[in-house]
Image 1 (tube, rainbow, N blue to C red):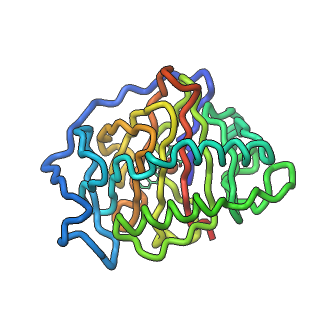
Image 2 (tube, rainbow, N blue to C red):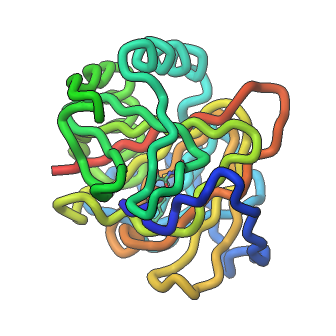
Length: 251
Ligand code: MD3
Ligand code: FE
């Protein structure tokens, strides 16, 4: 992925991005027969308008599943605590030498890391210890969400866990450190809400803004797989931090 540009110095200032509603947003329930059982990636449009639990908004390559993981948020956060006890969150350093404001750890066969040597997937943490196994609950959630978005058979080998304390952000970047862009990416938001930035194929495409709340899931693939995206600085609130689980097929 490359937070090449995703990462900013911890002290980095928020980047202002103009808000924009997606044009012609269509809201469709997951049960809509026109979108059930899709055998290939469809697409979804993201919108800040409330779509209600269990609905999808469709536009090429991305599906927004509001509240898809809501019922299991406490269990997911408990799993994160277990993983972090074995593989601690780190503010990893970009190749340019800047510590990221987002702290990260991983579980699964491969984990995304960065240091002065570059961005890459490793089977161990930077200290040489294998990543904790991906919990069955994580694996199942990712596969169910991908399937609901039209990406059947998703088998992630990597789960990056991002932790955003207030002020942490991720600037616009593409996820391109994976071997095969045919596989989708599934993102699960937990804890504090955040404003997600969803751009186009080019860095200069003006991003749309989408508020992601605890339990929301987004799946990306097909024509949207290499879109630029980022996260605005997280505001403080009722919870200590925001977590994002990012499921990928790394290799
Ligand atoms: C849009 N994390 O770690 S993944 C990342 O909230 C990252 O922490 C986000 O971006 C976060 O790289 C959530 C969202 C995502 C992932 C892949 C995409 C959005 C995407 C690919 C294409 C378009
Ligand atoms: Fe990303």
